[in-house]
Image (cartoon, rainbow, N blue to C red; front, side):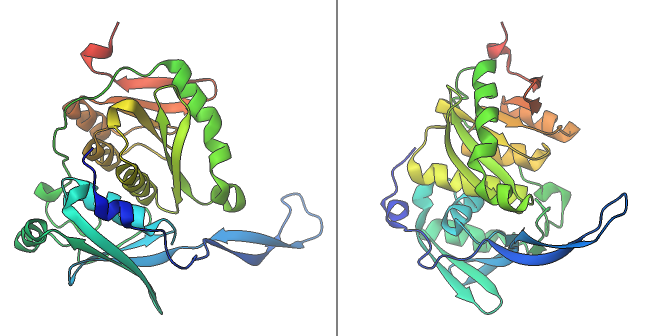
Length: 284
């Protein structure tokens, strides 16, 4: 990974934004009995606008934390930047209606974005990976990246899955958010990000990995959601060689994984996992 002093100097959000709030609900037993009022924490879902220079690009519904990581990862997986050095800096501002992240691009990438005119022009909902894309030809397709790393041992995958739940404090409190984690080749979790949107969680993780200068060949990604094609594309944009999901894959996810030479592991649970796609070089 190329070192980027601008990214290294970007701090965390100056003001801590709440990621959950307490509400009151009524618990109604299925078999009868008294109705009880209970306090529950719910995950906060807030609009975050992404602006490049002075050009608004998209409004995404996110958990308002780790927004610097989100903006950097989103920029890479959207194809707006090709590497971290394309970002000169960014700022996060809180407004009455939500958050705005302004990303300062190097001139050639900003000019390419404006010339391409591929702007979302819509709100990206929490479950949406391609909201605002108007043509089939504009569906995400990551650039091919060399060096997919070595095969990940089944024991490492199991170790990462065992540690996953303990690294999700917001989900433990609300039961409403997804996680994306980076594990070393030994299965030890190194980084984890949470968000109400599965795509946002993965973008946040990728942004954090870019900022830390992590080598994609030294580990694998684990996600707590279903494995659709855009999750594969985001992982491929970072250069990950293995993507593990606790839920099932879609057909297009399998097709894209083959195209990128990526190992795709899904339905990964405590009692085992299923390998759906694997490069020939990893087969015994």
